[in-house]
Amino acid sequence: MPALTFDLLATDPASHARRGRLTLNHGVVQTPIFMPVGTYGTVKGVMPRSLHDMGAQIILGNTFHLWMRPGLDVMQSFGGLHGFEQWDKPILTDSGGFQVWSLGAMRKITEEGVHFQSPVNGDKLFMSPEVSMQIQTILNSDIVMQLDECTPYETNGHNTTEAEARQSMEMSRRWALRSQAEFERLGNPNALFGIVQGGMFKHLRQESLEALVEMDFPGYAVGGVSVGEPKDEMLDIMAHTPHRLPAHKPRYLMGVGTPEDLVQGVAEGVDMFDCVMPTRNARNGTIFTRYGDLKIRNARHKTDHQPIDTTCSCYACAGSPGADGAGLSWDQGGRAGFSRAYLHHLDRCGEMLGPMLTTIHNLHYYLNLMQEIRDALDAGTFAQFRLRFQQDRARGV
Image 1 (tube, one colour):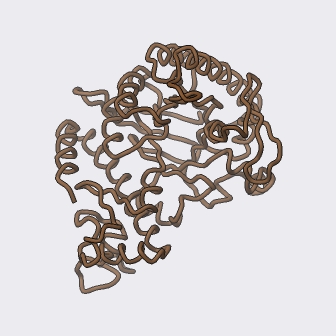
Image 2 (cartoon, rainbow, N blue to C red):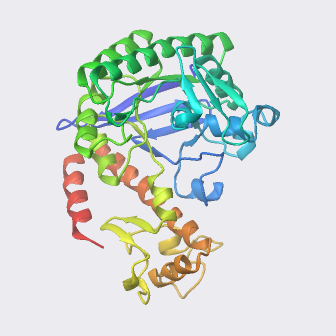
């Protein structure tokens, strides 16, 4: 059996949106899908059981951070990341390139790879396409990402020029070839994705795309967005690139974004998304709801008996089913969720339960949003869904 199969199940005639099914070594993923980010082998503040319950189908791991800690010897002893973190569904790992790039003065990028100092203990280390493939093979992730150079929006205090973006894109293209060759040499049984780069220049994006398609990767990602560029420029690249990738292969938009970004990304032909926004924002008191964003730290929530969102079925909003599955676990048959007042109190007191509950809600909201998108695509009502989504989000909490 191939490491990846992608079945296109439905398309939207009014946009580039599509409904698919992605089959990987550790299970099936229904697309479009949002992938929660588990940097250190855990989605912050969320039990694996909660991820299952909220419908997470695939999660991310971070190659760079897992290489730093706990290290490859530990990972190898568990047979990879699945056994280490006790997750039996698919995992995607990034290449480590973004994290190495973000080290700034602590790293030096050359054609061979990146020399850098470990942010953990100061050791001198080297990351190359070959090293990234070796690490990800030990992690045994279902989807492996090529090592690329993340093209910044700004370089040395000025907007990245076309020449600088081209130089970066062409090196990423050469690194894609090296990643592919090492992946095959290692006999990795999983799937390797290529990453389209080119900064904010559409013709460079097109060159990168065409070169990667020639390499015939099982799937493709659009990288180098959400790196400091204005929102309109990010949306411009999102409108240009995804639908030009092969229709019979999955398309992944890296590091994006808000609920509005996800719906727009689906309309542009994206199948897979990831972003730290739902978890990071939850820890900082921002909660996503059907009717807009809620700032739980605002004083107006101090005495508010409402749950976060009366339409939400997550544990934070509605409680959990009883042991027999017939009712709620506590109260007399009504809603058993937590009030905004309680969440406000937890946040003010710095209690860890607060961000745990808001993270559960935010991830549930994102995953449920994707389920609603899939349902609309199945029913042929995606255009109506988009309009209703926009109206609801604009209404306000």
